[in-house]
Length: 374
Image 1 (cartoon, rainbow, N blue to C red):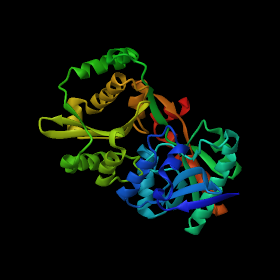
Image 2: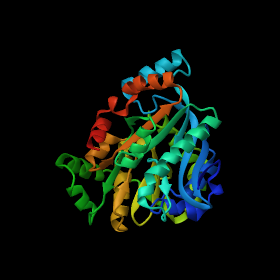
Image 3: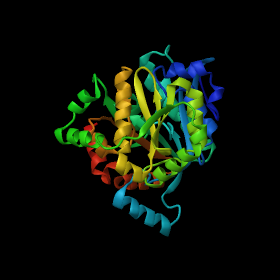
Image 4: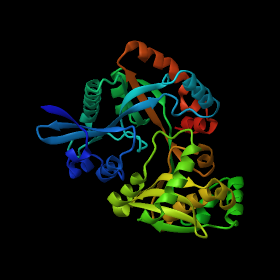
């Protein structure tokens, strides 16, 4: 008999059992412990688990928050929705229960290694049912699956079968790294991009430092983070200092913070996760004035590509932003889908109309191109 449990801490689930459900994930049990301990404001964590007797079959992280419907809107659309929110405070906000994580790019529901592949869809359907029951216990009407991989037919079938609506979400940019050198990578790019990069590389370069401890520079890191966050239309969550230090502590040699210095001034940092298969760019923050002079984003990009080359890492996973630059830099894109349903039929019907205007590909041509590629 299969039973369902919902926990408020991942530590209620055995580390090895959780990681067995996600054998290739860098964002495993240790990552979620760090996220949970960071105390990110305005989020409550939930962890759904399916058991057969006492044996774990499947798990999924989940969270609760107040969600602004225009989170993925940019440009003119964002200015319109901000004005609307000023006129009618709260009109674009709903309480949300979502399977997935605000600090992971894809919804990672996993099944244990001993579970036969043909059982997965039925288990996903049970996780959706468990999420609905858990959301109901908190009085939350809006249920979502955040960023399910678009090529996961079982997720799609489970969600659509349960009456969820679907819309494109932010695609994940990835760069395969089969190159033997940075010159070989540059040679794979378009002529104008290659010429532009070589020109910028002749400019003065910052000093680069790879760190696993950042306590002594944490105030500077947070100033850069806050400045970068203030320039972004897309950020869903606000990360505290304890997130950055916690990731480095709990993931040990699987996480590193790359610091960029001009003389004695910290002008950028890049938090990354690494293993033998991939490098994941979690967050890049920079001083805007120094970026113009030192091309900090491109320096960081090439430093990460070079690290992959030097350590035979095949894949650079580089996030859900900056699509125009990433198209030029040779990235491929993995599609993600947002599934959602409100238990109130009237609000659910209104959300069908709202999604026509808040789709992320409506406001950013580069993002639309990335989505169409997937």
